[in-house]
Image 1 (cartoon, rainbow over the protein chains, first blue to last red):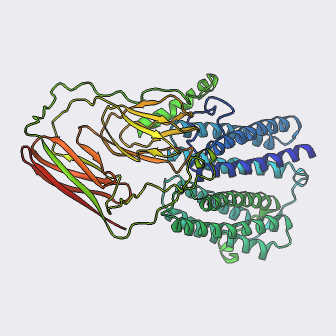
Image 2 (tube, chains in turn green, orange):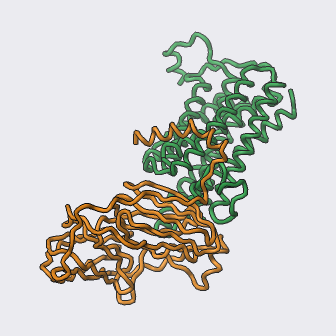
Image 3 (cartoon, each protein chain N blue to C red):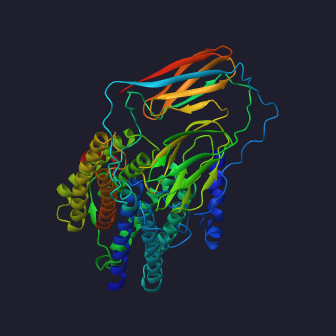
Length: 298
Length: 261
């Protein structure tokens, strides 16, 4: 266990969360094209510090910092980490952050095409999940061999968490498409309903079947709390948008709520990935179960 | 869309090179689209038979409350105004008419070509507001864009049939001379640095267009006699059409009646 490496991975994940907040601010402030050029800003690394340029350039600076942190993390993992799959995750994170930077550049140079802007928003979530995963697996507990218990339920909790994380990610895709005017609000509302149902089902399973597993109940509790906040923010964002429809956008209240909605959405996905990792480490499906047995248990 | 995809793919491949070259482009000045060549068969309108359409854009119903623009986050902008600045989305004149309505001949001039425009049309950024709010230009006519503010702006038209561009303009920097190759009603123009800034450019391929003034009035003069459809466009209240038949040397008055929503 390299304590410094773990702390650095946690720091990188925290910086990535700040980057997501900065990116959300750019979209909510409609600042995406306030800097027409890329990779420099107004041909410089110190552009005029006025209006929306402040948001766009800050986003670029934080992104460059996260990119640097990710490269350092990958190098550190290569030198100190013994598990090959963790090293590979580090390399994957570098690939993701480079691709994310390129998508950011393309979105500026091609005037925010919806498909690219949505891809940029979604890759941000994937990268954040990678950063959170690296922060988790470099921790002391994950250095010890896993001793999984048998999960006799069906579907096993591990599979349920995969489904839930996938649904939350798709919901974030719908949200990004809504923000970048790729889709209307209906897919996002349908997604919210499905995600809520899946999270509640997962939570039910965690707290009624595995309440003795603190490694699983902790992320589950975080996930459901974040989901509740997220639903409130989603409702508030819709109501405020309706109330300020005639006002010149972006209204500050709208900016605050939508940025919080994006940030909590990212945190909810990260919590679900945390739960996914812990559940699949702590539990394994009981061998030899038939579909009929599974149906009875469910 | 396919071509756009190809462009995007090509850009991905070229980004490394762009980065090596320092990228950028902010502050550079170039023409967006070259204007059309002088037409071969220009329609000459006989001044003795030229007709005129005059009229106004009236407004019925309660005038919407003026919406204040908040420039508080941008001291360079707010200090240029001693009184609250209102959005120009809806401007009701003192005589109850509607300003900033773009009126133009929508049809009736097919097959006719006219002398290319001589001068440029000006769009200024003054007090962190685009002035004028609505402007008309001919295809290929130069639009001279100025920045007389002590702050940086970016000029970003959002056309659907013309080419999109986005260019920065430093305080009191060199003017931008741009043009639009294809007719388009209307092209929103944004400043992404100051998101409240918005203007609209109407691009037509003939000289018969106008924007209603502070009396809600407009005039389209020098038209050849004939049947026309006149359209009036407003950014909030949409479009209206009227058919007119103009006799030689005739004049016809039309009224576009917009209603509060």
